[in-house]
Length: 421
Ligand code: C2O
Ligand code: CU
Ligand code: CU
Image 1 (cartoon, rainbow, N blue to C red):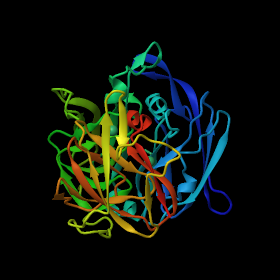
Image 2 (cartoon, rainbow, N blue to C red):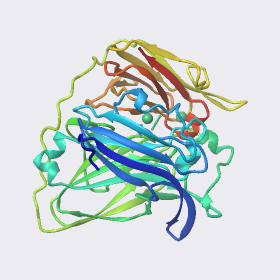
Image 3 (tube, rainbow, N blue to C red):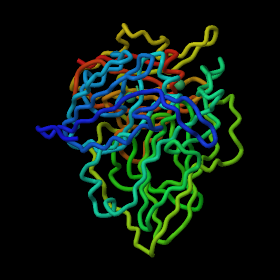
Image 4 (cartoon, rainbow, N blue to C red):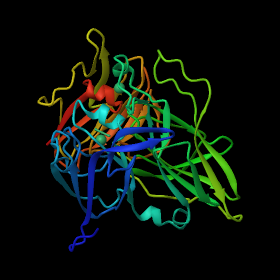
């Protein structure tokens, strides 16, 4: 809905909802009664007012993951009591088209609320979406979630799952087990969002090359061919498939070991079928998408180091040796600066690093320069890996947080406050 001054007005509620997954009924938590929540579609540059109502029986809040908006307009320290409504008012930046999502962010409650269903897609459209090739593509937004059900409820966590991160036995694509998605011949565009609390997706369409055109809230400069794609929790990918003639394709989740302790599944799991119909049609890729400005050279020296760690007895997750304290500022950054950070993961499992509000470019992974540019907000740190990123702190001042996007780790302390001023 448009307000008189052109502002895009949106209402969203979190509420307990009875839903059906396969043959099972369960009491889930949803946004607006659907799992996943409704796709929110915005346009780059526009003013937005989003009224969020909490109809749950517990406190929650709404985080607009990846949006470059003032920290004050998306402050996860603010919790919304049951029955309360809060409004997020902000303006989207001119070149912010990309794939985003929303989910709860009340510290200590994120895992169970997200595991119970709370997540939804947020799409920002912009100039590259109007390129003739993309305008003609069949587009699907795929929200990837997983869930196990016990006695009509989202299954409880076993103690070990607070360490490893809980994975469900049902793999859900837009709330359905193995749906059939229809598309027309030509270019097929898939926007994938990993909205799982802890599960990684290692995606492939067997026999079919994928062309990556966007990551997180960013287009790439030009399409990049990839055979498989690893999507850690919180990450998004924008993909094109060239399907000039009618075909039936399968989206698979391939084995991937995210922890040195885990034995990976042996076989691929089918996630969804893509039913492509229609007469023969050309499927040309766009040559260029959007020029990006390089923030720093691959060999730039780091200004600071962020170490993800864990300790046993009692089990805790740490950033730079400390467990999260909402009253402590862990890193201070000068507004207007460009910084290079070295992210280290000396643990024996992967951790997806995420920073709010300020996107970054990956310079190197284990010393190897990143092959192409993108603005990222989640980057997976493999076990033992060191990743260098360049960050642009020019846009806003205020307090934001960085954390591991495995929700259990975040709730159990793998988070830090960053003050930009
Ligand atoms: Cu997806 Cu702190 O967020
Ligand atoms: Cu976020
Ligand atoms: Cu983690």
